[in-house]
Each structure stands twice: as C-alpha cells, then as structure tokens.
Image (tube, rainbow, N blue to C red):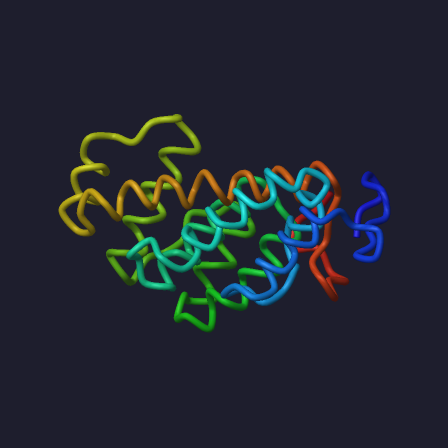
Length: 184
C-alpha cells in the first residue's frame, strides 16, 4: 500500500489496531480504502480520525453532492491521487456534473449551474487560498445552511485535508488504482 510504511499484517496487529480495523469495517464505510492503513501505526489517532471521518462524511447536514464537492475541492488542492480516485465516482453518482469535477481536477474555475455548488466551492476555495472566509461568503453559507452545517463544513474540509496529507506523505494509492488523476 505504501513504500514509506512497514508492511502491515492483521495477524501481527496489536489489540488496539485490531479494534480500530473492526470499527472501520463494521461502520458505514465497510472497507479500509483511504488513509486507514497509514493511520493504523498510531491506533489512537486512527480511532479518533476514523470516527471524525465517519461524521464528516455522513452526518454534516449537507447533501451528499455538496459534501463530495467539498472533498473534490480538497483533493484537487492537495493533488491527492487516492482521495480523488475514491471520491470522484461517488460525487458523479451523487449528481455532481462531470464537467465541474474535471474543471476542479485541472485547476480551472468551474461553470456552476447550481448556486449551492458555487457556494460550497467559493467557501472551500477562499478558506484554502486565503486561510479565511470573506464575510459575504460566510454570510451566504450561514443563510443557506445554518451555523451548525457551516461548522461541520469547516470540519469536513479540515478532515479531508488531513486525509490528503496522509495519503500524499506516505504515497498511498486507492485499492485498484492504476491511473493517477494528477501529474506527479
């Protein structure tokens, strides 16, 4: 899975590592695709991160299309091969336009037919580029989604940046990934 990490074996895993793996496999994801086999070398981090990830992926209050858009913005910003590979098909299946996703992947400004798509993109882009969100974008996000969902959106963006950093640092690829969406 990674040339930078030792080979991981369930047979030689600690009790804590096995518990994390079981929690991930029995949770909403049902698989270990992503950063989990990197985080497993720190079981406490893995357990806390996977729980945060389950919340950020499934319980933010955003529709799936918008959560996946935020994840793709993150994957494109970090040029995270595995993150894009895993989430691109989910985003398309959730209704995100293919041309919008392709614009993100190639570093272009997408054309937005949906105001919510533009708002999520603008929010995430401002946060990543300027390390802040303008009053206008923030106010629009709160008016549209409410404070709780905006807080959750910030958490989602932060969590998937952590995922991207993990995948990139350890050179991890998604299960079955043969093509890379970003040039290296």
